[in-house]
Structures are given as C-alpha cells and as structure tokens.
Amino acid sequence: MVIGTAGDVSTGVVDELKGIAAVCKAFNLWFHIDGAYGAPAAIMPDLKNIFQGITEADSIALDPHKWLYSPLEAGCTLVKDPKHLTDTYSTHPDYYNFDAQDEEQVQNYYEYGFQNSRGFRALKVWLALQQVGRTGYIEMIGQDIELAKLLFALANAHPELEGITQSLSITTFRYVPVDLSTDAVTREAYLNKLNKDLLDELQAGGEVFLSNAIVHEKYCLRVCIVNFRTSEKDIDEMVDIIVTRGRDMDKRLRQ
Ligand SMILES: *Cc1c(COP(=O)(O)O)cnc(C)c1O
Image 1 (tube, protein in one colour):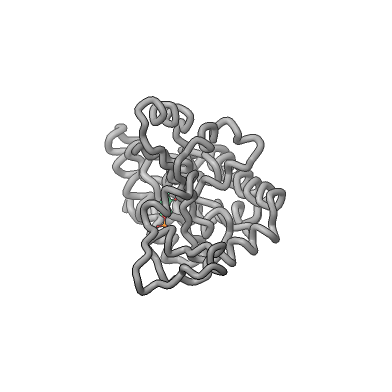
Image 2 (cartoon, protein in one colour):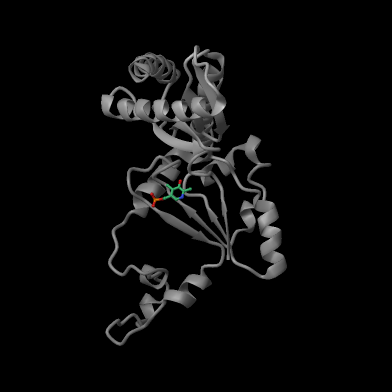
C-alpha cells in the first residue's frame, strides 16, 4: 500500500497523486489517499491539475465534518470497488437471519465495515449534498480558499508578519518584530519561542482561535478556513489582533 495526502494537515499541500498512482500500478499496490481535509477541493475547476490522479485511488479517507461543512462528526472512506469491503467484512452467522427472499435487495451496512449497530450519520451528509449541491460547494470552498490567500497577502504586506505557506484554505505565517537584529540561529530560536507563546496566548484569549504548524523548523501560526461564515472582516480583525498581541509578547519576552 502507498498512501498519498491530498491536503496536508499542516500546510494543505497535495502530494503528486498521479505519480504515486503510476507507482502503485507498476507494482500492483493499493493506492490510498488521505483526503480527510482536502479531498472536497478536487471539485474546484481551477485545481484540476493539483488533484490529478485522485480518481485512480483504490480508497480515499474523507471527513465531511471538515470541508463538506457537516456537524461533528462524520468520517468516511470511499472505496473504488465495494466488493473489497464485503469480501473483508461480510459475515453470515447463524443468528443473523437475512436470507428471506424480500430482503435480497437490502444493503446491510454491517457487511461493509466493523460496525454492526450504527447511527445514521450519513443523513446529515446526504442532506447537505442535496441542499448545497456541486455549485454551492464550489462557491463556499472557493471563498474559503480566497480568504486564506487574502490572509497570506496581508501577512506578506505587513512589516511585522511573514507569510510562510499558502495552499488550499490553509495559510501559515508568523509574527516577526521589525527591530530584531541578532545572528540567524538566535533569531530563529527567539521567533519560535515568541510565536509559540503568542499562539498560547491567542488560544487562551478567546478573541481568535488559530492552530500551529512547524514548517522547516519554523514555528508558525496556522489558519485553516473550513467555515462558510468566515468573512474578510474576520481576517482583517484577526491580523490586527495578532499584531497587537505580538508586539506585547515581544516586549515582555525581551525584558
Ligand atoms: C483531520 C485529519 C485527519 C484526522 O481525522 P479525524 O477524523 O480527526 O480522525 C487525518 N488526516 C488529515 C489530512 C486530516 O486533515
């Protein structure tokens, strides 16, 4: 088995799926994609290129509670050939009487996975698919990506912020004081401490909630936008809050 990632947790980067698919084909290996976060973005017309090869996966993990906007939680595995699931999981113990003629058409989900008794999680996912539709998802996912790009642009335009990565709807960046003049090693160590402490304070503060990512040993603030209510105003305000809190934190740490 080879596992490719379509939407890395930290940065949103998509592996070269087409290349992995070719390797799997050549060596007769199962090709699984972790698309827990990023797979829904494959419907974006302008992202066709980076998702090339996704259709060749044998299985894809996908979390509708992430970028399909379902309420927590709804995890899902898509399998190209459902027969693999029934071959693996289907059992017919004596105490299950599903042999009656009129039951023949029924799809018994216990034959497709570990779970026997199971809640109807699929309902909320199905309802959203019906209500939002492909065009609705393209619109909402597109907006999330635009907001993440806006944040990256604002970070790079701001003298005290540094954009680090931008991919799908994830942006990583950090607070960098303007007058920091030490050697490179000391500087990076200080920036890591500063941004870690800043993130802890932001998370505890209750105004904004960001997460973290470590990119090439740089401790970054990480924003992953998967909420259709997030607006440009939120992004603008967040930048102000981070810069204000960043200045404070820097002052305290340098004392
Ligand atoms: C969220 C995520 C996971 C974990 O999924 P859970 O449903 O929270 O267990 C795995 N891989 C990626 C890429 C993710 O974004």
